Image 1: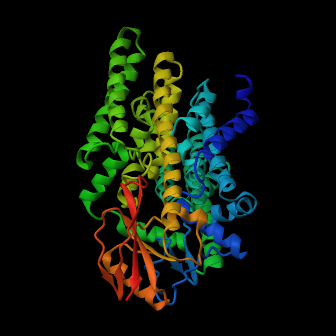
Image 2 (image 1 turned 135 degrees about the vertical axis):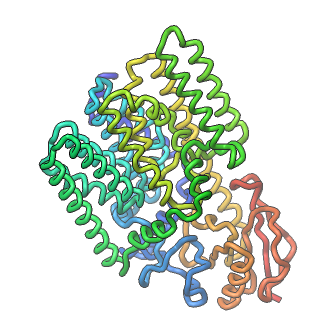
Image 3 (image 1 turned 90 degrees about the vertical axis):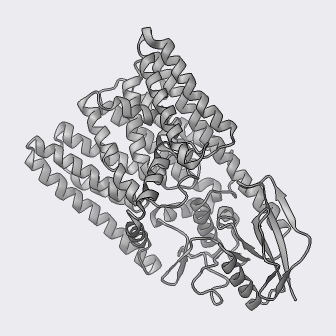
Length: 545
């Protein structure tokens, strides 16, 4: 059996089988944030038999700016109400949706996870490891790759493309194998950039580091061919995607997203430093100003403990330190924290990679490629929802490269490796359990509230309808509001649509106005308990008059 698992086809099918089994623990009608928006788009496209990713807007005439669109963050792109951030993955998912709906489209991120695991195996082999299959299984099942393979995210696909681009450029440095390396790596990074904006940063820093290394080695031919070829491949793919977006939407949605993020880069130094600390070591179990420090200390103690476990004379001390770090995680779990936003906190193997990456020249190169983009990613990453995420998703590539280094360096040290792997598996299982629980939480909560609501509903939780995207109804009179001002605007929209009553969905205990644009609040507040991140949801009815 063990020998069979070292055959690529068998190993790939087994890994996909594990992903598939775990994916069935999630509720397909309850997805977190962007995923719900993508599923809503696929649902509308399928029901209407259209090939344009237009989710529509029933109140377009009453709210032309789309401020109250039920799917929060829906953008008006040309004549289209677009909820998607990447077209290539969306169109690849259409035939899967038509066959198997929300359950089957998850095959795409699963294949992305498989491609990441295969890339890890190849990189481990490039680093001279005899345990390349350990890298395959550990990256596939004991890192955030597993968490992001179970929902309709584009993260694993983007990561896989960038890892394979790193392999191509790594070969240029180590073997001077130029040939078509530049254009291939550039095209891979370009395709990744159509899905993940941080790919722009990783592309620039990766090719920059490689060119500098080649220049120091006086490999001038390789410098020119790699840099020029990379630029060509990158520009061609991004240009093709831009033409694709304009043909489908009438405008470039990805370029607008990049411009928006770039425009906010560097704004608020204190805020950026806070986000950097959060996405590095935060555990989400303590106050925001203190949480990342606890995470950093716990990870430092854990890494020192694993380091000492490699020495028979220091194993007892190492075991005590590992136990102390585990105690911190247990305290965080006992406190009810689910999200682990820190890259290193959610991936113990990546944290260990920071320690071991400087031991050899080849692993040092991977360490530089992993760390060079980090400051730029911190300066430009989206500044919202940093704490409610898993494992610093904008630093996904850095975490994977560091984890691969740790695997290569540790797998020969039996006790240290087993402890490190166990820690990685347990933390990753934490993430999978959270995603599964959260998906059912969202699905059950949405069904409870909508079952007792009027046909017209406005939610003060921007993500309420978006997270229920797989069951989204574009004709339903739903709106989303972020403030009391927008809530009053929503009442005006309902009045313009001729509704004599509507329901406001809000966190339990919200202080809602007694009157809204001619509507009055009536008795009979309905509360759904024990759902969502707060205690419950109120469904408060307003009637005209």
